[in-house]
Length: 466
Image (cartoon, rainbow, N blue to C red):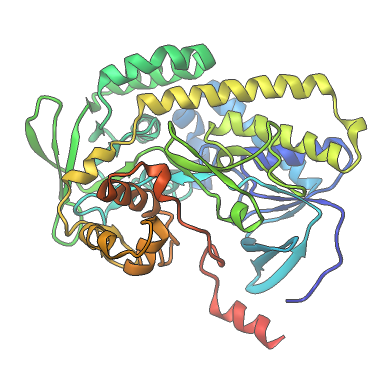
């Protein structure tokens, strides 16, 4: 690796709501941060910018007021980016000894940092089903990417299945652009949502109200919504042809469709945090491992983490967390003059509310982990390495010493493929916990490995030659 001079500038990874809020805070303080992002456009999953093909339909997609707010937000973001060292299309694939390993313009580079903020966000948590690897099956986030980035539907007759608020948001956005043959299969019983509604209202009544409005809009549009269902299988020979499920009354149904999107909440993107030295703790409500951070997001002497990568809190909460982390970083670099103590107190209260809302929402959209115990042995769990649920179950007795997910990974290769466990890691943990009869926290989490995403061979070879 070529060593660069040690820069005394904040480095931010991720140009979603948390990263952009942090960048704006540094710009206000007269600092020009380095902002790295894998994508060619700023914005996270929820605030992803529209393809030019859809810009004329923004009001139809989001509503007049929300569209105007979105336009104003993007204009503010562009101003912030113009005052940053903004490096789009930059993949950060490793973090070691105070430096980041990057790929940009087809070449590997390294970047030293003194103060690092990771705002890497989250992706859909996925549980497998028979047939989930067929053509035409997407994650809920993938369905939104298809719509917002590429201006296309994933199909003409679609099923959105799982347990996530994104089921309703994605359905509404597809519906507003003209698709009507949509079915929502929510695994959480309606009574579970009623039970959690009070907690959600206590922390963010406006967000809860927005969710209820979405459901009312979908019902008026004729979208079929079923709660408390058991998901059985995606059917088809070469691609999606139908979805088989059992409704809350126990009746089995096979629904014709040509595309499916599945999701069971969000899982944090924490690989870089681990490589940068963060320690982890298990959240029994959200059922994920998160980096251990201070109330202001500090995970180590030189590392801060904000947004869904630190704790699942949604776009608005991520923006609050990003600003709070940046203010904490300003204090750490001796720019306490740019920090108003009262503001930090207000941000901490708002962040507490965002976290409280997400914990209540996790009760309303609970991961149906019992679903795994009913799946057949030949259900593919790791699509990269073609590892089945039966492979994982049979590996548990063969693991020497205390059984944990990394031992099972070593035996089965589950999580060793291209996605590095992003899409099978949640299910692997649940499957090992089920097979051992232990709590999910006891079977551990997949350790991060660099490169955290595949990098081009040409870039690696070019670096080796230099």
